[in-house]
Image (cartoon, rainbow, N blue to C red; front, top):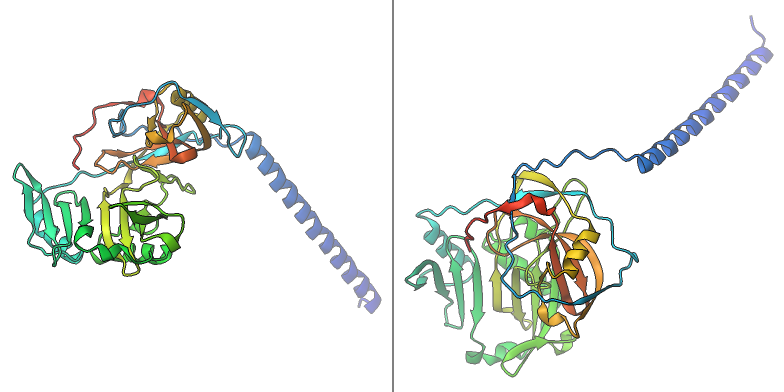
Length: 360
């Protein structure tokens, strides 16, 4: 029978070698992780080839605006140099609208949910899908395309000037009000609900709204709702519109009573299940196109003195505000004075399909 002394010695050896084993395992695990990270850094896994599942893409549905030429662009970027963008991106389909016998009835229900009388009427006989709805009291009108659901709201301030004499609401309250207003009519789609919102203070002077510096001098606030970011896994690529920094869904809300003075709602759904991937241009190639006058400029008055300073360069999805077959990426050049320049991000050889007639 073993003595207590020999048992004690054996136990100490087991504990000692056990500690050594644990330390060795930790060292080996650390070395393995470091080696794996270094390998992935210098030998990144090869991306799958772009699927190109939609074939040739139609050109972006950009507004027909003059393109400024001979502009001097200067890069003053946080990174110092043009950023390295992802090599390929997802392109989404946008399902077309189907007209049926219930579209007018559905539009009337939507108008009623937005607070307007349902007895709408066609504005122009030659355009039978555009209706106008009035609010009780006659101060506010809703104009709607009954097929697409695109609508605008206007308010007659001249008949009730007191509506713009109060101080504007807080941004948080105004954004919540707009989202609740749309949600009540089942128009707050999930990618609008989860997307970013921006605002700008306005004051009413000489019969029009002009920018205000702060809430204290503002009579109204403009709320912009943007789509949430899209893209492949772990990507959050934002959206831009042809009227940046204005969104396709915006509201001007006056006073603390939060009266809607004006609004535009241009929303077209995205099919997240029907996708393809396409290769992208580099930021350097896109910058060359910008300098050659091949970019779309959203805000021409932002160009002063024939020169523009670029502060940001990034990838976005172009949200046209009208029907398009596909939701496509662009490379954005953002600069001073609300300058935004868009260059189609997909490599040029993958464009060429005729654009489907817009259903706005």
